Amino acid sequence: MDKRLLADLFRERLMQLLDRSGENQSAFARQIGIDRSALSQLLADKAARLPRVETLLNIAERHSVSLDWLMGLSQDQGLMGELHPSVELEERPDGEDNTTLLMKWHAEAAGSKIRYVPARIPDLLRTPDIIAYEATGTHQSVAGQANETVFRLDYNRQPGTDMEVCMPKQTLEAFANGEGMWAGLSAATRAQQLRYMAALIRELYPSFRLFLFDEREKFSVPYTIFGSKRAALFVGGMYLVLNNADAILKMQRHFEGLIRATRIHAHEAADFVDGLPVP
Image 1 (spheres, rainbow, N blue to C red):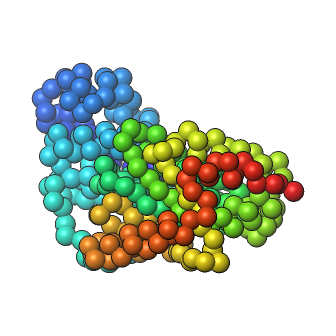
Image 2: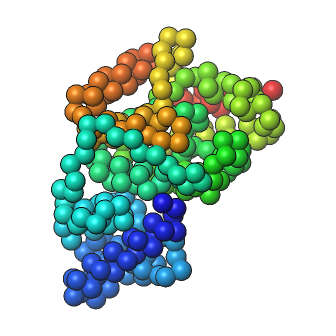
């Protein structure tokens, strides 16, 4: 589901809740923790706008509806929704992005720790040039990838978020050297990305913490653990989603093993990125 369609469905359901409440826009906005102008923007026909995760949660809780229904993923308004199987495959249609799923999963895990092993440079730390380069190379939508990056960065700037990211230090060294999939990138573009990344790591710390391990000692596929709710393994264009508590616990222990193997700790990560030579 692209962002425009998602925004349209969300707006329709928000209008339903506003009509059902019998309140004016000012009172409705106040109850869900935003001001009237922000509500007006969400209700505007021509705006492909989506709310913050915190606002989604406030709307769902205040009006006793499920996140799935609010975001147009289900016709069931009930808070419980459908029971999920222990393992699911969530596939992204060609040309679309994962923003819808990410918004839902992050909203459900609000207040919990997010653990993330990225496939390459963490999404929220990418510059527009890197987003475009990676999306074009993998035949994905540049706009869709930009949406994901904006959402993840916006999420991590909200108060109370807690995210740990583990990745091989060799990934960043290969990027700095222009090796592998980044062989076509200019030194200037790579240097700009590293400066931008280091600045964001400093800005977001300690609610966002980057740990770097040695891939000669540890191996991991890309995945994200959303608190105790689910673990989503990224397998290229789709997610293998684990909903079973025992499976999620095992993934949490795997992540803790990566943390224990850390060579560059979170308080050192920005300096490490800043110090990478770019030939």
